[in-house]
Length: 341
Image 1 (cartoon, rainbow, N blue to C red):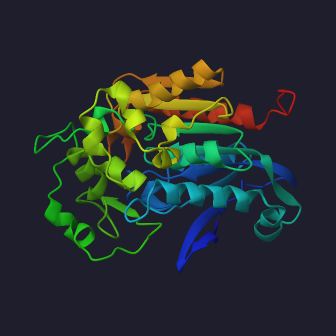
Image 2 (spheres, helix red, strand yellow; image 1 turned 120 degrees about the horizontal axis):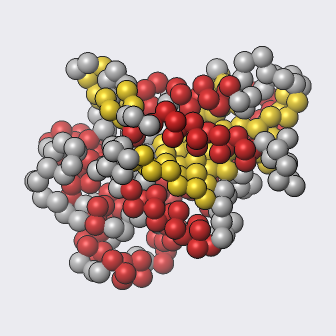
């Protein structure tokens, strides 16, 4: 594995890990870009945040595995994530990428790039699908955010009540961020997990759960306060109430028929990212005539996890995870006539 910088914003280096398949064949190969979870506010491209099963499945199918960072919400916004994803696609699709970073005689086929977004990473994956040039050939959205940010789950103020499995996050634990005169942009804050530990390097992990409870996450995604206005309106009137200038970062409003073939995976008991996120995206893609599949794991909670440490998935998760990988494989190994290569 090698780590490279795919974009620089001021002094901030935004990085990408590249792993080649074992005994890679010489020639042009497809690749999969993994975007980590972490509620859009924390996480990193490697370690606990990078699903090893996804990496191993990609490599076993003869595809190049790439895992990317992006700027994290607060102080950065969804607009910044969109720009990072544009930069990423431009970077890896340029012929110089293969010449500089891949084995001699091997190249990445820029027409056969798939994207796998996990949880909060699905926002960045959706951004790649909408704004990437060239567009990815296929998308795999795993229990993902960004499909229904105007629903009550995200904009309602829940007070001090327990909301599903999300623990109450005291604001005082985030004072180093929320009360700081300025917060420098960051693109990685790796999560560390253990028997008595679940934390990240910059102590950002509570941001998304805090804003989930206060109903303010969308304010930080769009960069302006809109949630208080939206929560007072009927659902059907909310999109129109979002200022036109902010809608490019409200990705659910930007989906059209050019969205790549997409596999969506979700648990029906997910209390952190509701099933409606995937269902709404699936329904919209089908309405547009775009190719989409939705796999729902009965009894599955967020990330289909049964235990966070040691990591253990629920019944049916392994089969569902691999079904999505097989979807990517079929799409990425088809030639332009739709025939498997």
